[in-house]
Every structure is written in structure tokens, then in C-alpha cells.
Image (cartoon, rainbow, N blue to C red; front, side, top):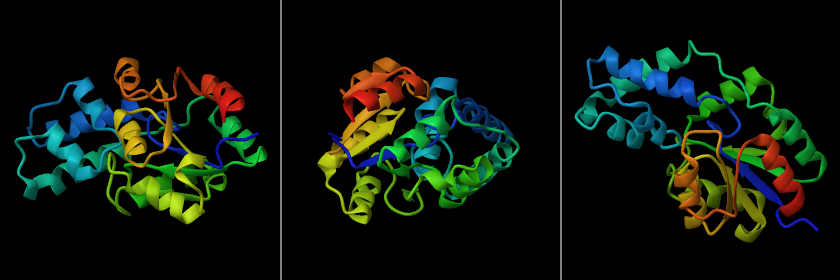
Length: 215
């Protein structure tokens, strides 16, 4: 018997193997504006947050009026990157659809950025909906999940969040949604375990097995 009807995935660091590219692009953007270059762990921490929250953390000395300049430099660098899916992701999504789950995305990316990624990777067909940081309050606020729950007409108890950051897990907790952490992305296992998700899985293969047994 299935426990969940709706499975909501984070994008960067969960489905998309883009963590390293994001870190490098954030560092390059700061260098372009002659700002202090954040260490990799600091840059990884902001993955999944909304743009303003991320920039405030990455460049605390930057005036809010100049956030657009930093964001633009980041976009220029990121658009030059080629990022793909973690191994096994497409097979996992295909299997979940065949088993009758409905799939959605909750991401700190912009709508335009997500749609571009889905198109380039050819996996938009797997998802029936998504929420991005320019559509509602970003993580860790619960709004992305509560919006999707309303859209799909399911309960919080029948929804499962899958993500690679504490922001994903905090969002799920605020929405009273169960969550599973995957540890191949932005945040370290110990950080994720401290949030007490249902499970911390190492990678997509282990996630697939957990879902078969528990979802």
C-alpha cells in the first residue's frame, strides 16, 4: 500500500548534479565585482535559497541596490556551464510514474531557469507541477509545499519532500510534510541528519530502494 501520493523533489543537488557549478559561478561572480570570494562551504550553504537570501549570505557587505549586478554576473557564468542529472535519475522518475506517483519540483531556481533546465535535459514530462522562488515565498518558508498540496488536492500527510539541504528539510517541517534527505548534493550528511528526516540516503540508487520499501 502506498503511503504517499505526491513526491516533491528539490532540483539543484537533488536531481541535477549542479552543486559544483553553482559554487564556482558564485565565486566567479564575487570576483568580478571585487567582493570577498566565499569559501566553497559558504557558497554551498545557499543553494536552494531564494536569490535575495542567497546573495545576502554570500556577500553581506554588498548594498541591496547592487544585488542585481551580482545576480547578473552569476547568471552569465552559470549559463556557460553544462550540468546534467545524477546517474539513475531518469530511470527513477520513470519508475515512480509507472507506480502511480505524482511528481513535482520545489526549487530556489527561477521559473525561467527551471523550465530551461527541464527542456535541455528532456525530463519535463515527468513533472505535473512545480514551485520556484519567483512564484511564492522561497525556502525555508512552507509556501512552495503548501501551494503544491493545494494544487494537487492531496494532504500534507500524503506528501513527501526529497531534498539535499537543510532548507528543504526546514520547509518540509514547516509544512508538516515528511522528508527524505539525499547526501550527494550541497549540504553535509551531519547537517541533514540533525534535521531528523525520515532517512538520509547516499545517492539516487539508495533513494530508489528506500522509496520502494517505504513510500
